[in-house]
Amino acid sequence: MVQAYILIQTEVGKASTVADVISEIPGVVQAEDVTGPYDVIARAEAPSVDELGLLVVAEVQRVPGITRTLTCPVVHL
Image (cartoon, rainbow, N blue to C red; front, side, top):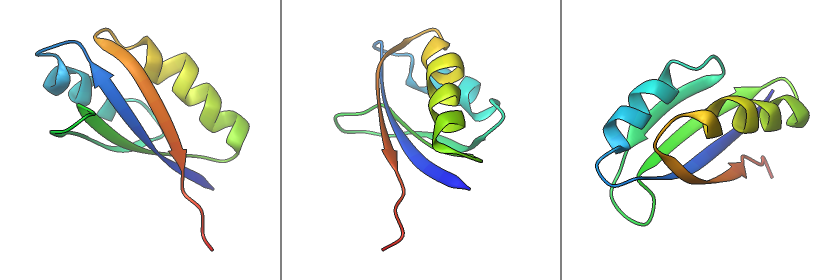
C-alpha cells in the first residue's frame, strides 16, 4: 500500500468545504483544513503509485475550489 499526504491550496473561504468533499473520496483516509501556506492536508492510500496518481489527478484535483496540490508520498526508511 502506498500512502501520501496531499497538501492543498484552495480559493479563499473554501477550505472547509473542500476538506469535507475530499474526505468522502474513496482512498482518502483523512482530510483536515489547516492554517499556513496550505489550506487542507489530506492523507490518502492506494495499492500502487500509479493508482495514487490517478486518485490525485482524476478525483482530488477535480474538486471545485482547489487551486493547487502537492503530493508527498510517505517513505519508510
